[in-house]
Length: 294
Image 1 (cartoon, helix red, strand yellow):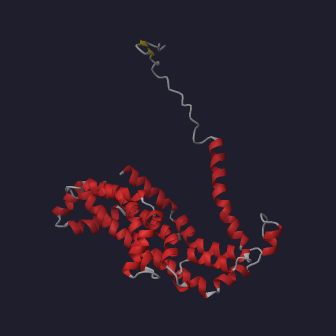
Image 2: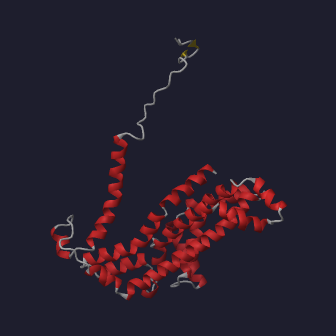
Image 3: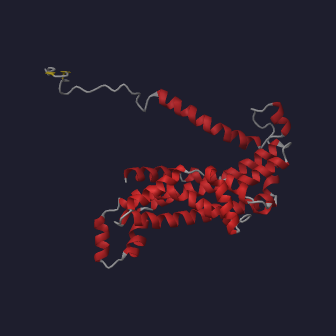
């Protein structure tokens, strides 16, 4: 029988004895209950907006928390048959798509140099990108507007695409650098022996191996650009140039008495980003996990 031996600080635990953890195990019912409550808190507002579009104004006034009875599809059909929604949908797709492509392309080049090249100031350059996370768009909106106006990009989609790329670069670089740095140097040496140069190694090995990080950063950049409201509010002035977040505000101001129609327009405007994020949810989690491990 194992006995506890005295030490200078007390008694040593017998061999084979395990320290009991006071923390709650992850599989306990209380953890599932808390997770269910948090999920419900996050999902209920979204469900309320979507179901509210299938109701009439009288139903919302009489029973704000009730279900549609009867279901009214006219609110959604009116939005989908209007040219305004599809014009703003196209503008949002152009803005989010070009922002994603530009951000990922520039971040891949910068991350490859930081992760694989040894030069003076490399750590300072990476710290500069990390410092970019501390400057939100709301802080820089006034000087940014002056700069865009000086460049003549006001009331133009390019005036919101370029700043969105700049503000999405820091988090994209921070996620991609660990992926590229984790690629073994032996692979690069083997590629060099086979006659592959720096660019060849980048396109043939770095891109495929860092694809989870590329997908993760691309999704984050797309969703962030799609939901951006403050920058289009300052830059865009013509209704035909509005993106969907700005279009929701304009639609709500125009049809403020028609709450059901506003809810239908809002749900349709957030649905693409919501579906896009839900489909690639596992990719996002896997990419962030790989970045942490790297």
